[in-house]
Length: 264
Image (tube, rainbow, N blue to C red; front, side, top):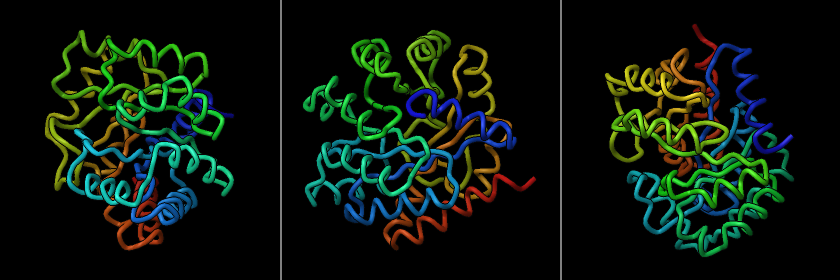
């Protein structure tokens, strides 16, 4: 079961357990290619629900210093978009069966060729795609190609999004909507924004898609705050930082975040 069907099953499983789905973000090639795959495998065995697999890019506008430094190191070692496609295939061969969504910026995907890219990641075993700098009102080509492939295409909403923007993103997103918790870049925060519940309530009032929250979530306590608020959440910077200490450290942090969701 792949593509949109895999994401639907992921959310249904989390619903049955009365918790949000936990989707770690991790970039291919940090601190090196093999270690990045080992880290993702370790998180898979820790029981996470799905993954956002980062494609390194030289100008990652939405990413904070931790992820920027990691992806820059990956690029310096020569990681390419084709390496990221091959990484998905390798992860499937190593037994990772959770949904895998590739997250990458627009220019490298255009250089690769959008139709070829979607076909290649689908064949490799990916389930969808997130493109942070692709506006939904300019993404019809992506939408059409992903729809034909039955692959998810996820768009983003920020706390500044108005009702019109919420409807637009909801109309174009498949799989889920990525809700950005704050205005700014990725990174660990001591506390989540105080107006987070109001933001999510506004989105729910105007959207029918599942909602996944990211940016700033880094601790088990913050993960528990996602229960009853959203359908899923993303942790990136904290796991990438742990990756500097090796795959076991990343797996251990993922396990603690996942375990926190089973506590009342």
